[in-house]
Image 1 (cartoon, rainbow, N blue to C red):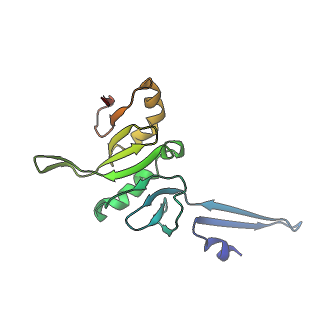
Image 2 (image 1 turned 45 degrees about the vertical axis):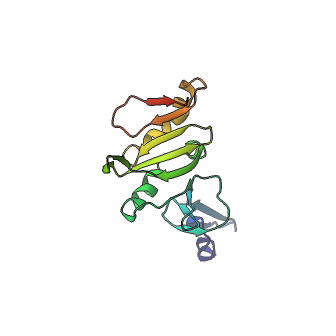
Image 3 (image 1 turned 90 degrees about the vertical axis):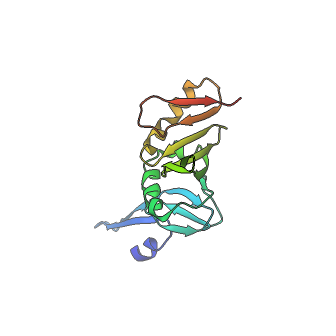
Length: 161
């Protein structure tokens, strides 16, 4: 029974315990879906598994190619994002920061949020997204672009015109 359960797509771990009174307890640990990779038409789980599915499970959609050298790190960093914040991200786009054809930050992403805001964040500061709900509340209804890709503790915000 354990092997059958573990063969299911989202199952990370299964523990089955049988007690003397005949009671069987099945503990199942699921791998959390992180994002849907549109390029490969797969749902990406926190355990780095890719599942073929038509459903997006309410997770962000990665809309472009991410270099292999960064893809694994993206999954690792996205797994640190709170589920409530993850649900607020609509789309993710790999968007390195360039200046005059010189790449300044090749780990930068652009997130389109469900609330019409957008966020720039890089792989080194991805955990700053966990503060998004508090940051959004402090914007007092304003909409624009948040820059969470710097090492500074200050929040940079540019309001839409």
